[in-house]
Amino acid sequence: MGVATNGSSASAEPAPAFKFLIYGRTGWIGGLLGKLCAQRGIPFTYGAGRLENRAQLEADIDEVLPTHVFNAAGVTGRPNVDWCETHRAETIRANVCGTLTLADVCRGRGLVLINYATGCIFEYDAGHQLGSGVGFKEEDTPNFVGSFYSKTKAMVEELLKNYENVCTLRVRMPISSDLCNPRNFITKITRYDKVVDIPNSMTILDELLPISIEMAKRNLTGIWNFTNPGAVSHNEILEMYRDYIDPNFSWKNFTLEEQAKVIVAPRSNNELDCNKLKTEFPELLSIKESLIKHVFKPNQKTSKA
Image 1: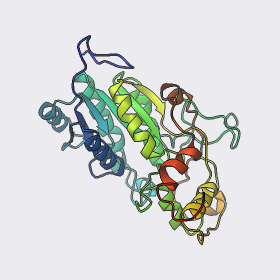
Image 2 (image 1 turned 90 degrees about the vertical axis):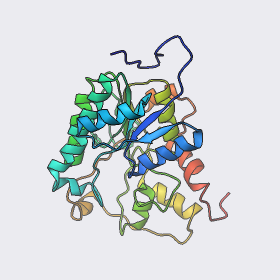
Image 3 (image 1 turned 180 degrees about the vertical axis):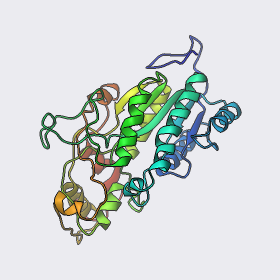
Image 4 (image 1 turned 135 degrees about the vertical axis):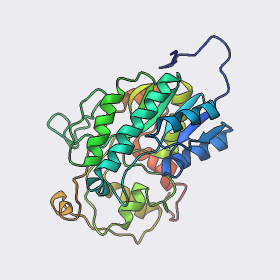
């Protein structure tokens, strides 16, 4: 098969030009990924095939002849993951069957697959207590089964461990500098009537998506906690929003028990250990530093220094 993985090079010859095949054109991350490639002069094509259709995926690869494949497709539910609770077959088809089919096709073609997954498969427990700074590591077994969405994601992650060509990136509560995007975690919580206040690991896409491209170039595989180091709470983010964007902004908190009355499925809250990613990319900023540099400073509307 000849998959070159984890920093290996396919041959001693000069590295070939990169060409990416991206799935998830209509999604938030997939769209941003295409823009990044365009800005960096990396040839890319969006896949036309459905993930669960093996013949269509093979046709895409035959036509594009990519050096790497990226999967940013899948079902998260609209307007949120509660949708998955009542659309279970559709969720399985996309998040399990589709992802596994793409991984298998890529393996057969000797291609590394960068798979944008989720870290919402853990919840704080006795060994990883809220506020302790002890995060879940890549090898830890998922312990959150509160939502059907998270169940399917944990299921497929376990199965993908058997594919040495797959790089699984555990994204959490993604944030970008586009504060108008409804998928942006900051945009969501500024529009809620009430929010909980729990520290969580989060992914600043402006910093981490470029890193995912570099991971592909390095042929890195396996599971990676794909968040900025540390944790940040809802209130801390909203305080930054008030200080940098809207000094008149205010919000109200409610408890997890109160939140449970207005959602269908419980939500994951956790901190992930990012030492593996930080070792590979020492320049990676902590979550609070990254929020200020990549999100709030570029959007600043107040006189805060």
